[in-house]
Image (tube, rainbow, N blue to C red; front, top):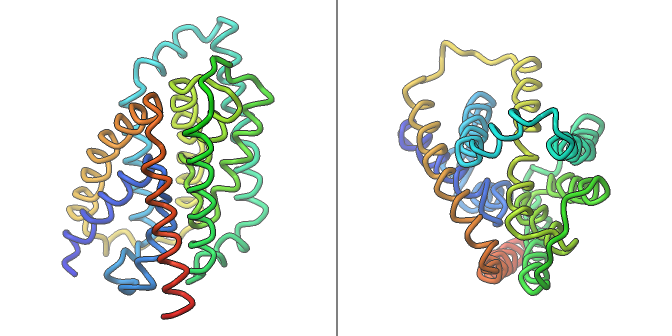
Amino acid sequence: MNDFLQKIILGIIQGLTEFLPVSSSGHLEIAKMMIGDDVAGHESLLTTVVLHFATAMATMVVFRDDIIDILKTLKQKASQKFVIAIVLSMIPAAAVGVLLQDQIDALFSGNLWLVGICLLVTAGLLLIADRAKDSQHEVNYFRAIIIGISQAIAILPGISRSGATISTSVILGIDRSKAARFSFLMVVPLIFGKMAKDLLEADMVLHTTSWTALGLGFAAAFITGVFACKWMIALVKNSKLYYFSIYCGLVGAVALLYYFLG
């Protein structure tokens, strides 16, 4: 496949599935098995870093007013509590990423049955959250840790990160708008941390990279990411997670059928 087209397709997939509760990792694993690595999105590490940077920037653009407000009022107790909650939510995923990196990498090697099961789990979580009663709880420290554990579990291919964290937040009784806001903001520091780790540890051959193709991939991921982030916020507010629950359930079932019959 043409490198430019491949990077654009990868960018669109990354931008949409980073925010919509359908699991980007799960969809890429399914595509690898059905189409093949080169066609379905076999990314170099540099491509992965660039596309994740694009979605991190998309998050910051969508929530720029919130971020600026937090920075301006950092001396106030409310802002300090929110920042501490973000830090606490990062600990589980960071610990899993550092301590179990090899085991995590092994999961992303054609385990289509695992992807199918995890997509069904995501479908169940979304359905429960969609039917949860509205409430106005805040993101306190205890809830932040529980949401962080959900984010750590979402490292599994097929568990949607946004789906897991938003669903957990809603089930815990957190206001839906605040649940979406916290879910998207809590991942930004982790993305930058993972990017730094990859850049420091990896031996990437930069001179062989098509920077034009990467730029197109970045633009595609950023634009679709902004769109998907805003769309997801509206869906959470209006309790429309049910549709994604059906989608994840169907894709998970197809993945399992393909694994056992194909």
